[in-house]
Length: 218
Image 1 (tube, rainbow, N blue to C red):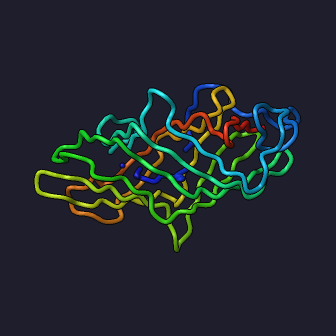
Image 2 (image 1 turned 90 degrees about the vertical axis):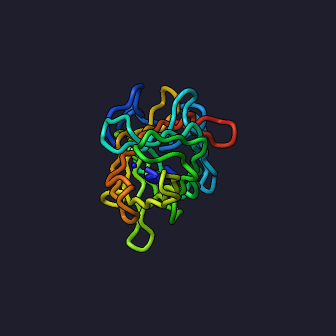
């Protein structure tokens, strides 16, 4: 299952509908710009925010590509820009929060979702021009970890998951100013046998905003 995060954060690496960021020689200005490719550079210290795209959910499935798991109709992330160099390059951010709400489950034995909490934020985050890859990384002391507080037919349980490889990877798109994570793998770190052994996180956050302006990846 994500929460199997999250970020933030918060805040993975397969298909993404839409057009990725412009590559190499086609890039102009900084890696992150406001409003369009030729917009002003996103300033160091700016706070970026996004919520799950309208009409979609943040999903934590028990199998890659599966439909059994947890669906959250609400999810947001917040990140602070640490460095935004000229493109092509790699911008760095700190994913400071990722939240989930209005969650439901269709896991056998689970009667409700009490909370989905991303632990150990902030997480180091990079955005790479050209590939449009967004990578969120934990540390040995502060791994990417999500705690699922679930109600079951036998009582309340906590299921704790950590990202496999201590990273999750997404793709940014300038078509809808989004970041999409697809089937990012988490493994159970602790919890009773009722907790599924694995979790896979999928969500699209759009649009990514700096205040009221959309953020473009060059």
